[in-house]
Image 1 (cartoon, helix red, strand yellow):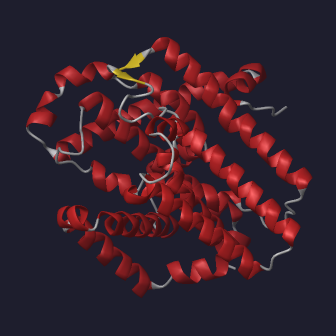
Image 2 (tube, helix red, strand yellow):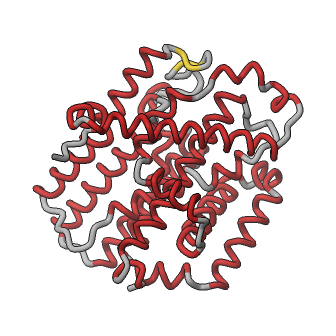
Image 3 (cartoon, helix red, strand yellow):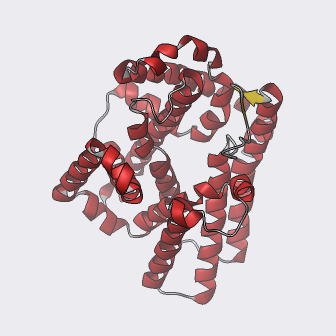
Length: 350
Protein backbone atom coordinates (compact mmCIF):
# COMPACT_ATOMS: atom_id res chain seq x y z
CA UNK A 1 0.00 0.00 0.00
CA UNK A 2 1.22 3.50 -0.82
CA UNK A 3 2.85 5.29 2.08
CA UNK A 4 0.46 8.21 1.65
CA UNK A 5 -2.29 5.91 2.91
CA UNK A 6 -0.45 4.07 5.65
CA UNK A 7 2.40 6.03 7.21
CA UNK A 8 1.15 9.55 6.61
CA UNK A 9 -2.59 9.78 6.85
CA UNK A 10 -2.39 13.57 7.26
CA UNK A 11 -0.72 13.90 3.86
CA UNK A 12 -3.49 11.80 2.35
CA UNK A 13 -6.16 13.98 3.98
CA UNK A 14 -4.46 17.18 2.84
CA UNK A 15 -4.26 16.35 -0.85
CA UNK A 16 -7.77 14.87 -0.88
CA UNK A 17 -9.09 17.99 0.82
CA UNK A 18 -7.13 20.19 -1.60
CA UNK A 19 -8.73 18.32 -4.47
CA UNK A 20 -12.19 18.80 -2.97
CA UNK A 21 -11.42 22.48 -2.46
CA UNK A 22 -10.57 22.85 -6.13
CA UNK A 23 -13.74 21.03 -7.12
CA UNK A 24 -16.01 23.24 -5.03
CA UNK A 25 -14.26 26.28 -6.53
CA UNK A 26 -15.07 24.97 -10.01
CA UNK A 27 -18.73 24.49 -8.98
CA UNK A 28 -19.03 28.07 -7.74
CA UNK A 29 -17.26 29.32 -10.89
CA UNK A 30 -19.79 27.48 -13.03
CA UNK A 31 -22.69 29.14 -11.22
CA UNK A 32 -21.06 32.57 -11.34
CA UNK A 33 -20.48 32.18 -15.08
CA UNK A 34 -23.98 30.88 -15.74
CA UNK A 35 -26.23 32.86 -13.41
CA UNK A 36 -24.26 36.09 -12.94
CA UNK A 37 -22.54 36.54 -16.30
CA UNK A 38 -24.82 34.52 -18.58
CA UNK A 39 -22.28 32.19 -20.15
CA UNK A 40 -24.12 29.46 -22.04
CA UNK A 41 -22.97 26.49 -24.13
CA UNK A 42 -22.94 28.52 -27.35
CA UNK A 43 -20.47 31.11 -25.99
CA UNK A 44 -16.71 30.56 -26.26
CA UNK A 45 -15.52 29.89 -22.71
CA UNK A 46 -13.34 27.73 -20.51
CA UNK A 47 -16.45 26.47 -18.71
CA UNK A 48 -16.92 23.33 -20.89
CA UNK A 49 -13.37 22.24 -19.99
CA UNK A 50 -13.95 23.07 -16.31
CA UNK A 51 -17.04 20.85 -16.49
CA UNK A 52 -14.78 17.87 -17.18
CA UNK A 53 -12.94 18.60 -13.92
CA UNK A 54 -16.07 19.14 -11.85
CA UNK A 55 -19.00 16.74 -11.46
CA UNK A 56 -17.39 13.38 -12.41
CA UNK A 57 -14.33 13.94 -10.16
CA UNK A 58 -16.60 15.14 -7.33
CA UNK A 59 -18.63 11.93 -7.42
CA UNK A 60 -15.46 9.87 -7.88
CA UNK A 61 -13.86 11.32 -4.75
CA UNK A 62 -17.17 10.86 -2.88
CA UNK A 63 -17.10 7.16 -3.72
CA UNK A 64 -13.39 7.01 -2.89
CA UNK A 65 -14.10 8.32 0.60
CA UNK A 66 -17.28 6.26 1.00
CA UNK A 67 -15.41 2.95 1.01
CA UNK A 68 -14.15 1.97 4.45
CA UNK A 69 -11.80 -0.94 5.04
CA UNK A 70 -12.59 -3.47 7.72
CA UNK A 71 -16.30 -2.70 8.09
CA UNK A 72 -19.08 -5.25 7.83
CA UNK A 73 -22.12 -4.07 5.91
CA UNK A 74 -24.64 -5.89 8.07
CA UNK A 75 -28.12 -4.55 8.67
CA UNK A 76 -27.14 -2.51 11.72
CA UNK A 77 -24.19 -0.79 10.03
CA UNK A 78 -26.13 -0.13 6.83
CA UNK A 79 -29.05 1.51 8.64
CA UNK A 80 -26.72 3.56 10.85
CA UNK A 81 -24.76 4.76 7.82
CA UNK A 82 -27.86 5.82 5.91
CA UNK A 83 -29.27 7.62 8.95
CA UNK A 84 -26.04 9.55 9.33
CA UNK A 85 -25.92 10.44 5.62
CA UNK A 86 -29.54 11.61 5.73
CA UNK A 87 -28.76 13.73 8.76
CA UNK A 88 -25.72 15.49 7.26
CA UNK A 89 -26.76 15.63 3.58
CA UNK A 90 -30.53 15.58 3.09
CA UNK A 91 -31.57 17.52 6.19
CA UNK A 92 -29.28 20.53 5.52
CA UNK A 93 -30.32 20.49 1.86
CA UNK A 94 -34.00 20.74 2.82
CA UNK A 95 -33.31 23.57 5.29
CA UNK A 96 -31.28 25.66 2.85
CA UNK A 97 -33.61 24.91 -0.06
CA UNK A 98 -36.63 26.16 1.87
CA UNK A 99 -34.76 29.34 2.81
CA UNK A 100 -33.65 29.86 -0.77
CA UNK A 101 -37.17 29.34 -2.09
CA UNK A 102 -38.42 31.94 0.39
CA UNK A 103 -35.73 34.49 -0.45
CA UNK A 104 -35.62 33.84 -4.21
CA UNK A 105 -38.97 32.47 -5.46
CA UNK A 106 -37.33 32.78 -8.87
CA UNK A 107 -33.60 32.79 -9.35
CA UNK A 108 -32.49 35.39 -11.91
CA UNK A 109 -35.88 34.91 -13.62
CA UNK A 110 -35.35 31.13 -13.71
CA UNK A 111 -37.61 29.02 -11.53
CA UNK A 112 -36.18 26.33 -9.28
CA UNK A 113 -38.00 23.66 -11.21
CA UNK A 114 -37.55 24.79 -14.79
CA UNK A 115 -40.08 24.00 -17.46
CA UNK A 116 -37.55 22.51 -19.87
CA UNK A 117 -35.08 21.12 -17.38
CA UNK A 118 -36.72 20.26 -14.09
CA UNK A 119 -33.71 19.97 -11.82
CA UNK A 120 -33.55 21.28 -8.31
CA UNK A 121 -30.67 23.70 -7.76
CA UNK A 122 -29.49 21.42 -4.95
CA UNK A 123 -29.54 18.35 -7.21
CA UNK A 124 -25.95 17.47 -6.33
CA UNK A 125 -26.54 16.77 -2.63
CA UNK A 126 -29.78 14.90 -3.31
CA UNK A 127 -28.03 12.71 -5.90
CA UNK A 128 -25.11 12.20 -3.55
CA UNK A 129 -27.39 10.83 -0.85
CA UNK A 130 -29.14 8.66 -3.43
CA UNK A 131 -25.78 7.25 -4.51
CA UNK A 132 -24.83 6.54 -0.91
CA UNK A 133 -28.18 4.79 -0.55
CA UNK A 134 -27.63 2.67 -3.68
CA UNK A 135 -24.09 1.86 -2.60
CA UNK A 136 -25.11 0.90 0.94
CA UNK A 137 -27.85 -1.43 -0.34
CA UNK A 138 -25.44 -3.02 -2.82
CA UNK A 139 -22.83 -3.59 -0.10
CA UNK A 140 -25.49 -5.03 2.20
CA UNK A 141 -26.71 -7.46 -0.48
CA UNK A 142 -23.12 -8.45 -1.29
CA UNK A 143 -22.53 -9.11 2.41
CA UNK A 144 -25.70 -11.21 2.68
CA UNK A 145 -24.84 -13.29 -0.40
CA UNK A 146 -21.17 -13.66 0.67
CA UNK A 147 -19.73 -12.86 -2.76
CA UNK A 148 -15.99 -12.97 -3.28
CA UNK A 149 -13.92 -9.85 -3.89
CA UNK A 150 -13.86 -10.32 -7.67
CA UNK A 151 -17.63 -10.74 -7.73
CA UNK A 152 -18.01 -7.59 -5.60
CA UNK A 153 -15.88 -5.58 -8.01
CA UNK A 154 -17.75 -6.95 -11.01
CA UNK A 155 -21.16 -6.18 -9.50
CA UNK A 156 -20.21 -2.61 -8.59
CA UNK A 157 -18.63 -1.93 -11.98
CA UNK A 158 -21.56 -3.46 -13.86
CA UNK A 159 -24.21 -1.53 -11.93
CA UNK A 160 -22.24 1.69 -12.27
CA UNK A 161 -21.78 1.18 -16.01
CA UNK A 162 -25.48 0.41 -16.43
CA UNK A 163 -26.40 3.60 -14.60
CA UNK A 164 -24.28 5.59 -17.04
CA UNK A 165 -25.72 3.73 -20.02
CA UNK A 166 -29.36 4.29 -19.03
CA UNK A 167 -29.16 7.82 -17.63
CA UNK A 168 -26.29 9.52 -19.47
CA UNK A 169 -26.64 8.12 -22.98
CA UNK A 170 -29.41 10.31 -24.34
CA UNK A 171 -30.76 7.87 -26.94
CA UNK A 172 -31.31 5.23 -24.23
CA UNK A 173 -32.43 7.68 -21.54
CA UNK A 174 -35.23 8.90 -23.81
CA UNK A 175 -36.56 5.34 -24.11
CA UNK A 176 -37.13 4.93 -20.37
CA UNK A 177 -40.91 4.42 -20.14
CA UNK A 178 -41.66 7.40 -17.90
CA UNK A 179 -43.04 10.82 -18.65
CA UNK A 180 -40.29 13.45 -19.15
CA UNK A 181 -41.69 15.49 -16.26
CA UNK A 182 -41.40 12.48 -13.94
CA UNK A 183 -37.80 11.81 -14.99
CA UNK A 184 -36.88 15.45 -14.55
CA UNK A 185 -38.57 15.67 -11.16
CA UNK A 186 -36.71 12.60 -9.95
CA UNK A 187 -33.46 14.02 -11.26
CA UNK A 188 -32.86 10.86 -13.28
CA UNK A 189 -30.82 12.74 -15.85
CA UNK A 190 -28.07 12.93 -13.21
CA UNK A 191 -28.18 9.31 -12.05
CA UNK A 192 -25.52 8.35 -14.57
CA UNK A 193 -22.95 9.97 -12.28
CA UNK A 194 -23.33 6.89 -10.08
CA UNK A 195 -20.83 5.27 -12.45
CA UNK A 196 -18.10 7.64 -11.27
CA UNK A 197 -19.13 7.11 -7.64
CA UNK A 198 -18.64 3.35 -8.09
CA UNK A 199 -15.30 3.93 -9.82
CA UNK A 200 -14.19 5.87 -6.74
CA UNK A 201 -15.27 2.99 -4.50
CA UNK A 202 -13.40 0.50 -6.68
CA UNK A 203 -10.29 2.68 -6.73
CA UNK A 204 -10.20 2.74 -2.92
CA UNK A 205 -11.14 -0.92 -2.64
CA UNK A 206 -8.30 -1.89 -5.00
CA UNK A 207 -5.92 0.78 -3.79
CA UNK A 208 -2.64 -0.94 -4.63
CA UNK A 209 -3.64 -1.46 -8.24
CA UNK A 210 -5.03 2.07 -8.50
CA UNK A 211 -1.81 3.54 -7.06
CA UNK A 212 0.32 1.51 -9.45
CA UNK A 213 -1.74 2.69 -12.40
CA UNK A 214 -1.66 6.41 -11.60
CA UNK A 215 2.07 6.22 -10.81
CA UNK A 216 2.74 4.93 -14.32
CA UNK A 217 4.17 7.91 -16.20
CA UNK A 218 3.41 6.42 -19.62
CA UNK A 219 -0.23 5.95 -18.66
CA UNK A 220 -0.52 9.51 -17.33
CA UNK A 221 1.17 10.87 -20.46
CA UNK A 222 -1.35 8.99 -22.59
CA UNK A 223 -4.21 10.44 -20.51
CA UNK A 224 -2.85 13.97 -21.01
CA UNK A 225 -2.52 13.43 -24.75
CA UNK A 226 -6.01 11.98 -25.11
CA UNK A 227 -7.57 14.69 -22.96
CA UNK A 228 -5.90 17.48 -24.95
CA UNK A 229 -6.72 15.96 -28.34
CA UNK A 230 -10.36 15.35 -27.43
CA UNK A 231 -10.72 18.98 -26.32
CA UNK A 232 -8.88 20.38 -29.32
CA UNK A 233 -11.18 18.47 -31.68
CA UNK A 234 -14.19 18.75 -29.38
CA UNK A 235 -16.65 20.16 -31.91
CA UNK A 236 -16.48 17.34 -34.52
CA UNK A 237 -16.42 14.80 -31.69
CA UNK A 238 -19.48 16.36 -30.04
CA UNK A 239 -21.27 16.49 -33.38
CA UNK A 240 -20.58 12.89 -34.38
CA UNK A 241 -19.37 10.97 -31.30
CA UNK A 242 -20.87 12.81 -28.33
CA UNK A 243 -21.06 9.81 -25.96
CA UNK A 244 -17.47 8.83 -26.70
CA UNK A 245 -16.31 12.41 -26.19
CA UNK A 246 -18.03 12.71 -22.83
CA UNK A 247 -16.92 9.42 -21.29
CA UNK A 248 -13.31 9.80 -22.43
CA UNK A 249 -12.95 13.40 -21.21
CA UNK A 250 -14.70 12.52 -17.94
CA UNK A 251 -12.44 9.54 -17.20
CA UNK A 252 -9.20 11.23 -18.20
CA UNK A 253 -10.29 14.39 -16.35
CA UNK A 254 -10.77 12.36 -13.15
CA UNK A 255 -7.34 10.76 -13.45
CA UNK A 256 -5.51 14.00 -14.28
CA UNK A 257 -7.04 16.10 -11.51
CA UNK A 258 -6.49 13.30 -8.96
CA UNK A 259 -2.84 12.82 -9.98
CA UNK A 260 -2.21 16.58 -10.05
CA UNK A 261 -3.27 17.11 -6.44
CA UNK A 262 -1.57 13.93 -5.29
CA UNK A 263 1.81 14.80 -6.78
CA UNK A 264 1.95 18.61 -6.97
CA UNK A 265 3.23 20.76 -4.12
CA UNK A 266 0.99 23.81 -4.21
CA UNK A 267 2.04 27.23 -2.87
CA UNK A 268 1.28 27.32 0.85
CA UNK A 269 -1.46 29.96 0.71
CA UNK A 270 -3.31 28.23 -2.14
CA UNK A 271 -2.89 24.87 -0.42
CA UNK A 272 -4.34 26.17 2.85
CA UNK A 273 -7.29 27.75 1.04
CA UNK A 274 -8.07 24.55 -0.86
CA UNK A 275 -7.74 22.43 2.29
CA UNK A 276 -10.06 24.70 4.27
CA UNK A 277 -12.57 24.78 1.41
CA UNK A 278 -12.27 21.02 0.91
CA UNK A 279 -13.22 20.35 4.51
CA UNK A 280 -16.36 22.46 4.17
CA UNK A 281 -17.49 21.62 0.65
CA UNK A 282 -21.06 20.83 1.69
CA UNK A 283 -21.37 24.06 3.67
CA UNK A 284 -20.03 26.10 0.75
CA UNK A 285 -22.33 24.38 -1.72
CA UNK A 286 -25.41 25.01 0.41
CA UNK A 287 -24.56 28.64 1.25
CA UNK A 288 -23.06 29.97 -1.97
CA UNK A 289 -26.39 30.28 -3.84
CA UNK A 290 -27.40 33.06 -1.44
CA UNK A 291 -24.24 35.01 -2.26
CA UNK A 292 -24.25 34.89 -6.06
CA UNK A 293 -24.20 38.52 -7.33
CA UNK A 294 -27.16 38.19 -9.71
CA UNK A 295 -27.16 41.96 -10.28
CA UNK A 296 -24.05 41.52 -12.42
CA UNK A 297 -26.05 39.93 -15.23
CA UNK A 298 -27.31 43.13 -16.92
CA UNK A 299 -23.83 44.68 -16.65
CA UNK A 300 -21.81 41.82 -18.13
CA UNK A 301 -23.37 41.64 -21.59
CA UNK A 302 -19.93 42.24 -23.12
CA UNK A 303 -18.95 38.66 -22.20
CA UNK A 304 -21.99 37.37 -24.05
CA UNK A 305 -21.71 39.63 -27.08
CA UNK A 306 -17.90 39.56 -27.43
CA UNK A 307 -16.57 36.39 -25.73
CA UNK A 308 -13.27 36.90 -23.91
CA UNK A 309 -12.51 33.51 -22.31
CA UNK A 310 -9.36 34.51 -20.41
CA UNK A 311 -10.85 37.68 -18.93
CA UNK A 312 -14.08 35.83 -18.13
CA UNK A 313 -12.04 33.11 -16.38
CA UNK A 314 -10.20 35.68 -14.25
CA UNK A 315 -13.42 37.47 -13.32
CA UNK A 316 -15.24 34.25 -12.39
CA UNK A 317 -12.28 33.06 -10.30
CA UNK A 318 -12.07 36.33 -8.35
CA UNK A 319 -15.82 36.46 -7.71
CA UNK A 320 -15.90 32.77 -6.77
CA UNK A 321 -13.02 33.15 -4.31
CA UNK A 322 -14.89 35.99 -2.61
CA UNK A 323 -18.10 33.92 -2.46
CA UNK A 324 -16.26 30.92 -0.99
CA UNK A 325 -14.56 33.12 1.62
CA UNK A 326 -17.93 34.59 2.66
CA UNK A 327 -19.50 31.10 2.67
CA UNK A 328 -16.75 29.84 4.99
CA UNK A 329 -17.29 32.80 7.31
CA UNK A 330 -21.05 32.16 7.45
CA UNK A 331 -20.38 28.46 8.02
CA UNK A 332 -18.10 29.24 10.96
CA UNK A 333 -20.70 31.56 12.48
CA UNK A 334 -23.50 29.01 12.10
CA UNK A 335 -21.33 26.30 13.65
CA UNK A 336 -20.37 28.31 16.75
CA UNK A 337 -23.58 27.22 18.45
CA UNK A 338 -24.25 23.49 18.76
CA UNK A 339 -27.94 24.20 18.25
CA UNK A 340 -27.48 26.12 15.01
CA UNK A 341 -24.91 23.58 13.81
CA UNK A 342 -27.53 20.89 14.27
CA UNK A 343 -30.37 22.92 12.70
CA UNK A 344 -28.43 23.99 9.61
CA UNK A 345 -25.96 21.14 9.09
CA UNK A 346 -27.27 18.19 11.07
CA UNK A 347 -24.12 18.25 13.18
CA UNK A 348 -24.58 16.40 16.47
CA UNK A 349 -21.00 16.74 17.72
CA UNK A 350 -20.85 17.40 21.40
